[in-house]
Amino acid sequence: MRHLLWITVAALLGLGCEDKTPPVWDGDGLLQATAEGTSIRLAWPAAVDDALEEHEVLVDGERVATVDGAIREYLVEGLDDATTYELTVEAVDQAGNHSEPLHATATTADETGPHWIPGAALRVEGEPPPAPPAEGEPAAPEVERAAAVLEWDRAEDEGGVESYVVRRGEVDVATVNGLRHELGRPLDEGEREALFVVAVDAAGNESAPLRWRPGADEPAVATAEPGEAIAPEVDPTGTVPELPGVKLNPSQTAVIDRIRRMGLQGRGLARERLRLGMIQRTVVEDPNGETEPAE
Image (cartoon, rainbow, N blue to C red; front, side, top):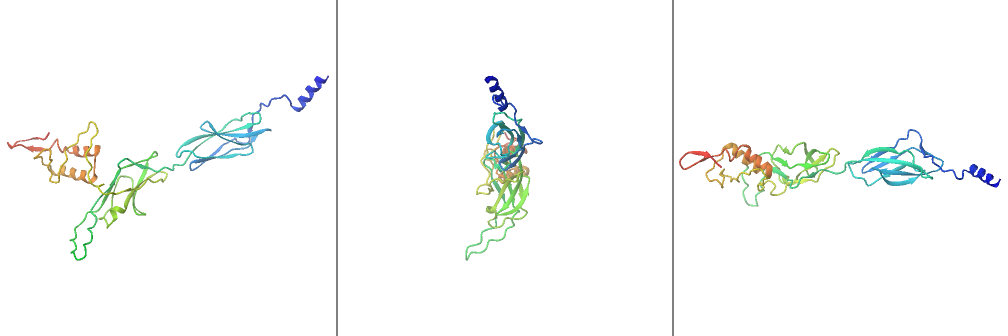
């Protein structure tokens, strides 16, 4: 009789009955994920359960936080920029039952600017105005100066470079998509040192400024990658020192001038020199008055 009474009381009190019912999401059960820079803010609906204990927050399948059952939002911080994450929230009751997971994806903001390739340089073609004469000395005669041209090496960005901005101090001079800008006039005094270029990505992030530096306009020493030939250096007279007597025609001289202006090296240098067959098609006069291609 006492045993039967104990079973009845236990049944009425729910003793010995294991809770196997998981929490259930109220309403549409949607997880909202909003990127805030390199953080993502989560918000979720209420979970229905008589003994709701907590919510678990997971990022790409790994638990990063556990919050009280009464809380229904969380800010995930310290994420990488320009990265897409999968976010998950599960409600857990006191018996350890997990609700159906709520999923959402969000991409953090791109906050990293482009970077310049190694050895990048800004080249400024155009002579600055002559320095004023010292006291008591006559002024130098005016010389017509050509309009300045700026050329620079490329920048790189995971999402791609959108444009390049030419600046003079805090003033935007031009925004271009390529690696060249014609100033349209000669340089002013001190302007070459004040000009610089920044690369901009689609998110508006800017690279470090690329400035002109002394020697940037001088041609670099020629270097070739395997399988590419490099033609000999030339002097201003148009003679190839390594091949005495080789003369350059006007087209080949133009190639030399371009090489000097742009400071080309490596593949670019090889392509420019071989583009017009500067060496292969040069004709050499021998002592007998006959001609043959230079080797």
